[in-house]
Image 1 (cartoon, rainbow, N blue to C red):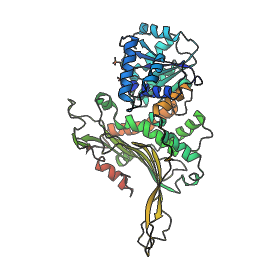
Image 2 (image 1 turned 90 degrees about the vertical axis):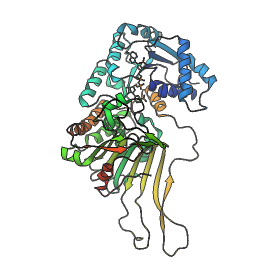
Image 3 (image 1 turned 120 degrees about the vertical axis):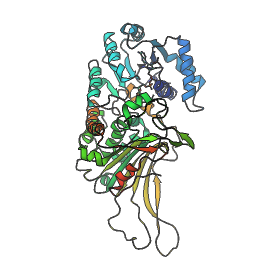
Image 4 (image 1 turned 135 degrees about the vertical axis):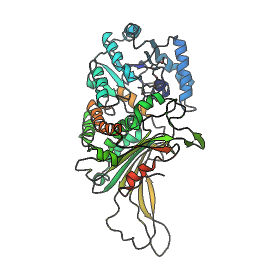
Amino acid sequence: MSELETLCDIVIFGGHGDLAFRKLMPALCYLYSDGYLNVNSRVITVSREKMSQEDHLALVKSKLLEFLPEGHFNEEKFERFQKQLHLSVVDFTDLTSYQNLQTLLSEYPDRERVNYLSTSPNFFGSICRALDHWELNTPESRVVLEKPIGRDLKSSRVINEEVLKYFQESQIYRIDHYLGKDTVQNIMALRFSNRFFMPLWDSNNIDHIQITVAESVGVEGRWGYYDEYGALRDMIQNHLMQLLCLVAMEPPCSLEADSVRDEKVKVLRSLRSMSYADIEQKTVRAQYDKGSSDGEPAPGYLEGEGVENSTTETYAAIRVDIDNWRWNGVPFYIRSGKRMRQRNSEIIIHYKTVPHSIFANKGACISENKLIISLQPKESIRLQLMNKIPGLSKEMRLQPVELELNSPLNSERKPEAYERLLLDVIRSNPTLFMRLDEVEAAWQWADKIIEGWSQNITPMKSYNAGSDGPSAAIQLIARDGRSWHDE
Ligand code: NAP
């Protein structure tokens, strides 16, 4: 087991919450098992619920059994891992209650610390203030912020400014778990380590790009949270914009965090701002009505919530234009929705057709080449090419075939996004985390649409649960003579 990884105390605020149990603890457990967690590092759960250390460990174990895939919990390894697990009972709103955390952390005053704020952003300010009060925000400390960071530029500034009173920007890690996915990082490897794609990655060759993040589930007991945000704020402003940045950015001068983030922020600043006329034409918002999911009846968004109406969209589709040399005239069509026919996240690079077809009059239809980067449910990268159908037919017949870029020999478990991201925080590598200027530039673009929608410039549409979304989204792309890639 590793003594080479950075020695640190990892403090999880909200450590008995859903995210902590569902994602963070399993990720730490994998890191421990795979030798990426220093054996002397401590994982300190901060919770307001008083319980003994014994009960805490029993709870962690039961949640690992619940959330790790079947067969991945290893009793013997957990016996050893649990020696690194601690509990500190704190009420975020009571400054004095932090004293026991201070006592625990002071056992190793010079140790590096990761403060993971797995809480509502309403607590970010008070937790950081308390860390400052108890002199726990040492220069070797990092603070990880979960989304959502605000509902718009103004509220995100309030949250960020609160945290920035006590931590430097270089200590702040704003998480976007999409960036932790192996295939998302592979976009950079694909683009910047292969000469092959370099001359083909621009408006001379690419017709348009689609980014889809579709979920088959509804709001899953988080209606109160979701209704305050909706698809634009919850998914598009952060996850889809980050994916768009990785696809659209110029080659960074190195893999240093700020080189990469400088290029991403340039993309965000080049997003064409939308007038009300653009918002009307280029955006669609919709809410799901009742329908079916996995063959079972599924309720509509409002059903059973005791409210008669809500203006929160559960689906959004937007045509995004980037005003720079590389992407002039190449639209990015992005969409995200809940209760869709299938869970599916992918980026599709649609190439232009060949300039002249010698096959055109010989019964052969040439489809455009596509590069399909799938993130969910399976991670894969496929290149769709035209190929001859084998045989002796008089006319040459063609068919689209797929070249799978991921090595089929690599059957090793792909790390979960939170493993990558937690390890990067432990190693003080902020490359995959959002810098303040990125967050603000993304909000600046999204705020225009939020404002237009608040004026009802784009009327709310509906779609059946379990469908591919509203017909208005099909029209949005069809108006440009294109169609969504739905398999
Ligand atoms: P959660 O289940 O409500 O967890 C929050 C935790 O904070 C709870 O354990 C809660 O304790 C604790 N807490 C609340 N008030 C407290 C106080 N005054 N003192 C001490 N502890 C207090 O929420 P979550 O789903 O884990 O989400 C945490 C953050 O991650 C949110 O910002 C969310 O938007 C974000 N996030 C979550 C997910 C996800 O899958 N869950 C995904 C992406 C982002 P009690 O249990 O005692 O109330």
